[in-house]
Amino acid sequence: MTMTKEEILKAHHFRHATKEFDPSKTISDDDFEFILETGRLSPSSFSSEPWRFVVVQNEELRNKIKNISYGAASKLPEASHFVIILSRTAMDMRYDSAYQKEQQSKAVPKERLTRHLEIYEEFQRNDFKLLDHERFLIDWGIKQTYIPLANMMTAAAQIGIDSCPIEGFDIEKMNTLLNEEGLLEDGHFTISVMIAFGYRKKDPGPRIRLPFEDVVKWVK
Ligand SMILES: Cc1cc2nc3c(=O)[nH]c(=O)nc-3n(C[C@H](O)[C@H](O)[C@H](O)COP(=O)(O)O)c2cc1C
Image (cartoon, rainbow, N blue to C red):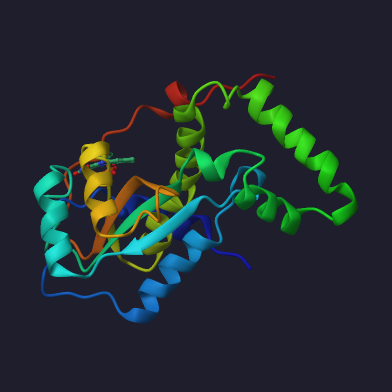
């Protein structure tokens, strides 16, 4: 399977953080499932797959989110589709949690599982020091969720669909709301980041990027 470099770069130039969506345009079910599928297929460290994609099409909940998210305010309610990416909390991210053991047992053969879990513990405890603070484990899970975030935005752009990633909210307030809505499964999930999808209302402004030489360093 190959795509031309020109086509791929075109999609990356097309993608921009869309500030306003055209309310008259709706993404088809088929296109939106395709976008979600690229999120699902994303890689994660130790196959932890800590994400859940909550597609919020309910107007009442969209309004509640809008009220506590300055970053989403101009995109809601006009975005065609709105996704909250949840991430598993420390209780599911620890190497010895039931969830991680289950994930590891799918990823490695049975005879290697015990050794693999020791390596996993070593990684979390010593290499990345994730067990020093609950927040480190949570943030490690959240880090993984930015991979599907990027993949879904790129995939959308490749089929001509716009998006905007959203971190403009208070985590505590958002978690309180999502918990009240029964979406955090008794503390197993936390908000990570959100994405609005749809079609742009107007063309974006100029692209702001550091020069290539400033972001790429070769060591030969
Ligand atoms: C993780 C993340 C969170 C962001 N949060 C917001 C947000 O809450 N609201 C917003 O309008 N833009 C948000 N942005 C968009 C960025 O400001 C934008 O991507 C950046 O300025 C580069 O512009 P471009 O994406 O149009 O190239 C976010 C981007 C990322 C990657």
